[in-house]
Image (cartoon, rainbow, N blue to C red; front, side):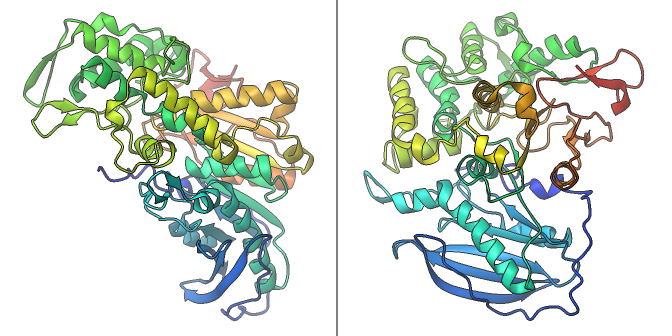
Length: 505
């Protein structure tokens, strides 16, 4: 099994610079780093409270259980000096519920930091905890991972902070991407009073559908008996970028709106592609595989189930092929999707997803929704309670995100608008931004937000709703992101490498 990519690991600290400061706490002396009394959340029992001195902060770890079987750790990092009165809870990635490595950065930025392991492995591709026996899912741990531990993380983080500093946190924030993004949406949907502001990027909302949808490329290749090489897949990607790049008025290797790119992969049939000393000729079968992957999964009647891979996005994780034992190419499938189907839908750790027919795939898709949507779907579009609580939600999605294709989040946002009275009313508390050329959470060469949390703080604490998100690419180009339904467009003159040359339209 391939190792979890760096961009699946908690990357949020890269996006959290430039914060709007509050006055630091005026405590006369650093509190003693020692265990404090913590009330147990409803339905839980505190097993232990331990304190550990870290560089520049005290970490208090609370272990709790719900049935004696699970042992959930919540770590709270409390700054020795410079505490701003804010709390920041950190989300996880893939099948890891938290981000313990991010606590030090939260402290450095003046926050009390808090995160949880939800009682499961911190290895994002480890689902060995999922089954108590073949055919039987560990419902306690699944509930911990899906929703419960995030809420308890908020409660315990606030309680420890108040007892440690002898005053409550003034403001509380959630930060997360991927699974961490889904956790943030879960809080907005289920516990709207937990956080004043939620930064939830590339969120894995509609988990029960997304987690099966991203298995689609493997199914397509196995059912087509055609496995395009990485070289051929890259040629399709490059051809799509070349065909659609200039539509936004700037030729920069980025397709701003992959959903509007009408490139037909059949145009590459017969083309010879050379890489690593090997020559490949693109076949009609290759083009049909590519067409289906871009179009997205369908059921046995051809009805669309989910968004496909964006044109211009990398293929490595969802549609990558590798040599099998006999040297011929195989499609291993996206590990997160494979693990979900094996551990939770089929409930057999060794289930072979490569054998799924189109009809069986559609059954698996429906079964996933039927069994788990109420548990981990995170798809409720009614955010009225969060709005009434005064909460603010910011999300950005990378237009080139292959791991959680942005179509899912865009669809969820449309459902929220239909439920809550249209885009303008929703933008009063929830703003969604698309980042052209950006991959999962970050990377890809497009403009990434440079101060997303700082702008969220400004919105929550000063009423400064972000008209745009400031963003920059790794090579220094700037281009601010616009809240949907607006998009950033080059104004036709000026330096295309400078944000002032773009307008929201």
